[in-house]
Length: 126
Image 1 (cartoon, one colour):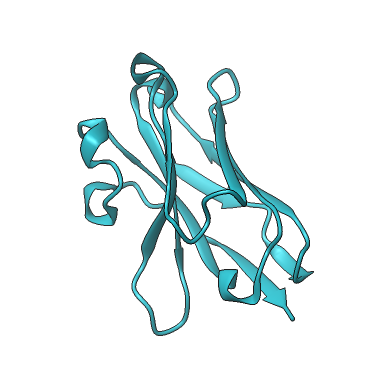
Image 2 (image 1 turned 30 degrees about the vertical axis):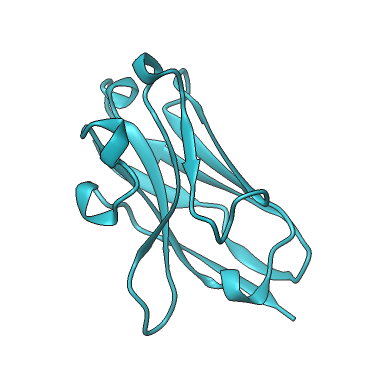
């Protein structure tokens, strides 16, 4: 599966953005999907994930975004979304999506993901 993230931009603190990650291939529904971000000089970090339907479309979030970000997926469109509200300057990063088929219990770890798409830049000004 190939992935392409989009929807980033430059916004002010407190604003919202919705990122999209479009996937190619007919096996999209078999994957857990994850959103990650990487700020300059920092490691890529997991921020949100959504399971495949057989796991009930479960979601999980990093503490840094819990309550502000919402991940969702539309299997008919082969797309996963990340709704980001109340953005903060510390959310500035390149955002990526990726897939995994590992057990959902282990799907909160960056190294368990692959098929990294091209990222999209999110910049939040204060």
